[in-house]
Length: 214
Image 1 (cartoon, rainbow, N blue to C red):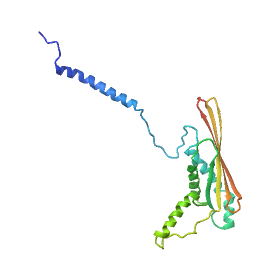
Image 2: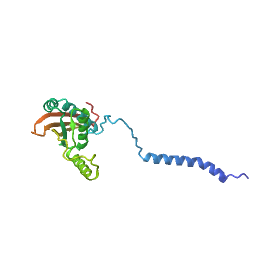
Image 3: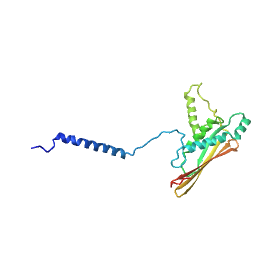
């Protein structure tokens, strides 16, 4: 009589494709549960607004605009005529008066960078930075050779200090929001407290969460 029960090798040949399908399906399921992430590199000056909050583009653009204003102001020529050399500037406190977290140090760094790159003024270190420099100078008095040791009392004093503040006004309705930023800065003569220059940069954004378009 013919044997109707498959032999063991036949069972293995029949089960192997099914096992492969189940294994691949399990791997695909694990990969899908991992929540894949895509990272796209782009130029650092690319404008991207995800939340509508203050971002790196705002910081850079405000700094560049204000420095373009300040370095072409009449005060620069007045200083050159009176003293015969470039003005020395220190960037002081830029206060964040808004309810939004704004990394002011990043903004100050953008301002200083734009100042230096303009070539119109000389920028000196902040009070916090000077402490580190003075520690190094003190260290040199003991450990550096006389010909390379830097002397005390040779620091360059600033002629002017830049101060300012960042303010915001937010208006919300029906899922839409208008964000208005105003950055006001002033340049103050350190000798007599005269404000020799004032500048402002404003930014306005519409953040739509209801499909509304301006």
